[in-house]
Image (cartoon, rainbow, N blue to C red):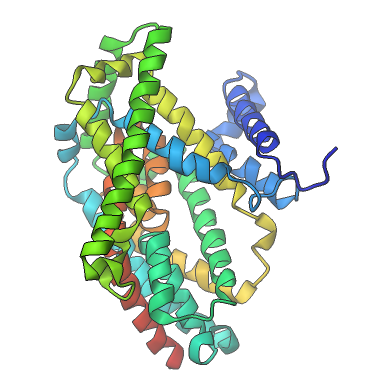
Amino acid sequence: MDQLPLTDDTVIFGLLALCLGFVFYTSNLEHKFWKKFYTFVPTVLMCYLLPAIFASSGLISEEASNLYFIASRYLLPAALVLMTLSIDLKAIANLGSKALIMFFTGTLGIIIGGPIAILIVSIFSPETVGGAGFDAVWRGLATIAGSWIGGGANQAAMLEVFQYNQEKYGGMVLIDIVVANIWMAIILFGVGKTTTIDKWLKADTRSIETLKEKVKTYTDKITRVPTTKDYIMLLFFAFVGVGLAHLLGHHFATFLENNFEAVSNKDKILSSLGSKFLWMVVFATAFGIALSFTKAKTYEGAGASKIGGLFIYILVATIGMKMDLGKVLENPGLIAIGLIWITIHALLLIIVAKLIKAPYFFLAVGSQANVGGAASAPVVAAEFHPSLTSVGILLAVFGYVVGTAGAYLCGLLMEVSASL
């Protein structure tokens, strides 16, 4: 028996498959206990929490594993191709402006939440938000703002801009991961309560329901028993798309970096457009949308979005591995800042959703397009319905574009808050 934690990806993937199998088997049982359990705990949350428990207990090591990298770089773009294969662009356009309003509300919540959190924590623990020069805590928190409005590229840009002490940077990454994952767990929990939440928000969900109904009608019409040829063709569409997305994404990001100073200079607002991951996601989505104008669209009837959904669940399990529940209380002061910060973001989203009667879908995806970025916004969107995946992607792209500018503004405001 290997010593713990397990580091062999083959064994770890077996454990993740065990988690997914357990969740889907028990969630479909007619037993009263499991029916009641999954009424309160959504399946996707369980797929996320079980690997988190394995990682937190020391059974598996996420640091030594390449599974998240493989899932996010290969399975995520493949899922995006398969889930946008039968997309109805006109119906998505009919969803209206509420998605954008909720996205920018989420962005504003991050920008003002950081400075307010610093002010609140400074009242009872001024040393937590202190530090001088490049050790100043606000500089480190600015990197979290970059991550929560855009993603990893924006976070790296903020580290360059504000020159936070890199020896302490790992602590900020920890807060980012812990708080963002707690919030994602809450968002996923809410997915199981969508009807109740929408009723409380007095939300107008007609455009979303129309889109879902349209997709269901189309899928019912073309559904067939898939053959080996169908599966080979789905493999062809998915992974030719992944290959093209990586090839074009790499070259396009390199082209932008080599030809535009605004992209190559990490101090500039548009530097995040040099992210190869961003363009990989964009090109995978574009490939899927292009296929939706061809006869490839009929492969939805052979289960394209179901296989895409399988890939997404594997991604969710690998994201769960990154969540070490034991580290939540490791640095309580800074974790408190992160929790207050994300709470302000959440409250602002809830207030605006209530005012404009936006469905919970727009609140959840608008938030994750900021806090989670391109890796988790499509995951959350797909939980509502596979046809809505592209909404998550489009909003995540907005996050990358405004991430550096928003985080820079947030950093300046946090500097002011820390000096008061």
